[in-house]
Image 1 (cartoon, helix red, strand yellow):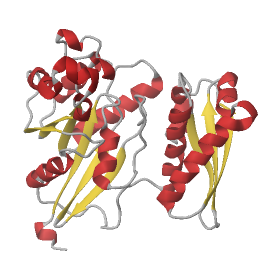
Image 2: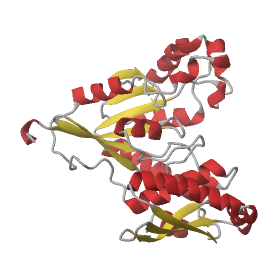
Image 3: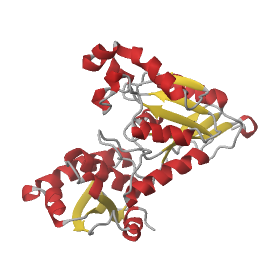
Length: 319
């Protein structure tokens, strides 16, 4: 490796909740390193993904969605995201088409900015780092009611203009992280402006997540997938035991909820819900770890854990 000509940088992936940041990271890395769901605020901590190429590496920082909230947990998540605005060398600023299907009820009236997008722009305007505007989820404009109402991608030009009235960007990219459209072009553009820098991580490393962390995150992802309403936001996961020397690998995980009624929902009738969560999580763990996994899940009521800052830090962030 020619370290004198090596290029590297930390690239922050920022934006409002559920805009496709984690889907983009997984697509670029080619591995599932960040959990995803169709619900907002799935990502709670900063997730690192390393993209290696001939002569350099990009260290992507996937961040929680930027939004206003008074909840302790959400404020902690937003604080993590906003720190990445300064920690990164380059920012990828993700936005999605303002259509009703994505929660923009006033889009048909030409109102393109919701509160969370405006809040994100306020903070982006204060940064001096190179910034790329990334208009994601354009596959949603290629058909259906949204495309018919807005004549497909024609909506992107006035939306882009509304954004750029607040923040100026180096370049603008139209992509679909889900289908891969435009992703390679975006990555190549990042490589073009990378400064000379050291190789921060070895070539065989694609994330800084430990196996234990990934296991907990996958279980959380399945809680988002299989449960509804407040359960995904009132639950978290800790790994109590992780026996890597065993075959299969033995994992004991604890799902924390805030109320007794939530515990019953997570367990389900005759244990059916927790069985489905465990089966789905185990499959992802086995693919990630490349070996068989024995997974045991328990559920504990940790009363109001997300509302008590001390308890939240101890459970969610290990503080």
